[in-house]
Image (cartoon, rainbow, N blue to C red):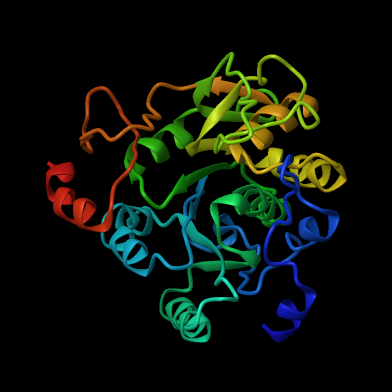
Length: 299
């Protein structure tokens, strides 16, 4: 931890008119403070092939949310014997209880063995770094015997794992690297510097972004991870709108397909496990809501 602090690579040094990362900041996506072996669950003996890996983006501070996820839709992940990890960042160095929170994270991982912790601060501004780090981790994943999908979700989602896993098992991998999710088409960059989603022309000059999949939840073929990771490390305009950048701009450059799937509903909706409409995800759930609704979801 001390060596990381001395490197001063915690916080993106955005200029007032730009929102891009430095090369040093991108280097923090190489490796994890808390890591896991890149061993495919399909390599386990006496186990049926698995076709889905679940990666949940969680704030390092969201202990209760992770606990509730393990009790609710995460319990279905375990029952289906799928691989699932929570990816978190570092505690902000200015927090007075930083050491205590870090000890709690390490204890949580010791108990559940499902935490990946990056080498940069956990923040909204660093979501692109977190996505790049995920792609780097997946690019080394040892799973050559079976085709695999990756499900990326945020920790404020309700997820219908049964339906998603059935899709992954019954649908062949698309021809070519692919993202599957709620597709955004003809979205214009925000040019107002005061906007949360500001993107200056120096970063992206086009009138419209390339089509991209909305960030709260999406799937992609695992073979997309390595080229995305390598290309991002070479790019001088890596910026903080992670879904626009990773699934839009970078994927367009690499020729990665993006496919719309209406079952990804990134709004707050009361989906059910056996929903005839096959809704897969619902957005904006807190721990209390998710725990309270779970029994109804299972009906």
